[in-house]
Figure 1 (cartoon, helix red, strand yellow):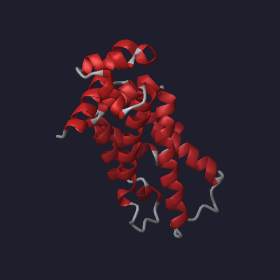
Figure 2 (figure 1 turned 90 degrees about the vertical axis):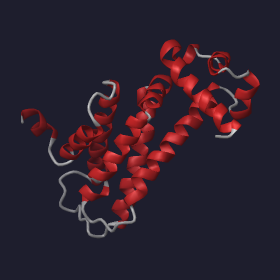
Figure 3 (figure 1 turned 45 degrees about the horizontal axis):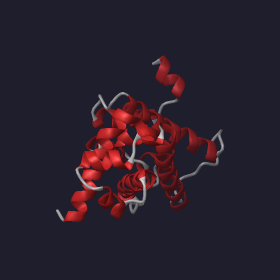
Figure 4 (figure 1 turned 180 degrees about the horizontal axis):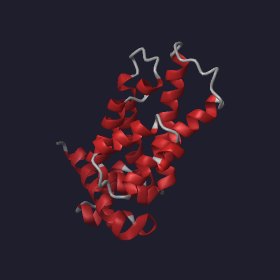
Length: 194
């Protein structure tokens, strides 16, 4: 690992370490530099301030998740279940689990709603692009307008992931992927009434 990547890793690890102790508002660049055992100048070589740090960390996470979501997009899927398949969901949840400390830090620093909105937007873009490309899907008989159907679909996925993160990721990625897969096909009232 080169010196630049090593410094960035130390900064990221210090951010993760300190965010749960201090919260984002009280956290300073000096705190991060001291914890990372680097000088402030080294921090400023990579980031303009703590806000730039969080923006770039989030950008990396969202890019990685976008790559996972789009990894199977080339397939000619004509089934809504295949557009966001179990495999894509599982890969995404595994990624979140592997980076759980950073994800939790982002939740704390940015606020749950902002972080989850970014994730929702990636999913929405994927859905809209796939729906546009999937000539075999017919929504003309749906009792709900497509935009509302998609919003309900996205909300169910994001809500499950959000709750899983708030619960400290106690369930396995396989369990969460299965919950999301089941919830895609069952009306909410049927989930509650069994």
